[in-house]
Amino acid sequence: MTRKIVRLILFSATLLVSLAAVAKAQDDRICSTPGLAGEWGYTSTGALILPTGAVPFALVGRLTFDAAGNFSGVQNSSDGFGQVGQETIKGTTTVNPDCTGTQNVNVYNQSGNLLSTSVLAFVIVDNGQEVRAIFKSQTFNGTNVPTVATLNAKRQFPKSGQ
Image (cartoon, rainbow, N blue to C red):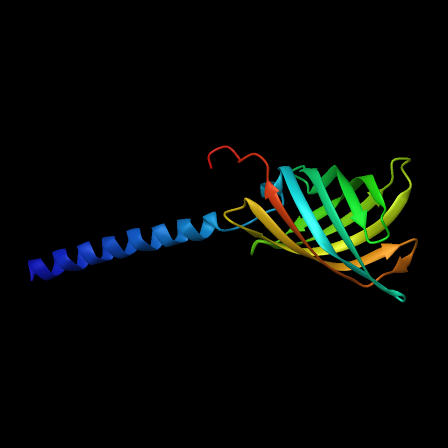
């Protein structure tokens, strides 16, 4: 009888330790807006779908996020019309606990004039070191322009402790 009680206690203790480890592992996988804070580099490629046909574009840039989800940065762009430019970017980001989120982006020219607005849906991957996104909407001068494009970003400097 004593052996059965000892086995039951050992089994219960092992089960509790295992459950605690699983709970801890699940907590480590929760994403948050403050967790995105830091410096990121990115590339984006795709096409604007205009009435005259698809116009390809490419972007490369750098963003800095704060813990509240605000970001700012610069990007260089190139499009199928042969235009190359440097732009300033500002916006907000919301991160869900399941590591998905939404980003609202405002793009400005060198003079500070608003060029476009975009909404992106994204997922954080690689233990918080990368982001993959798709453009949900793109607006130029108040006109929605269908867009097929993706964006890939990588954290420039690992967060402390990683």
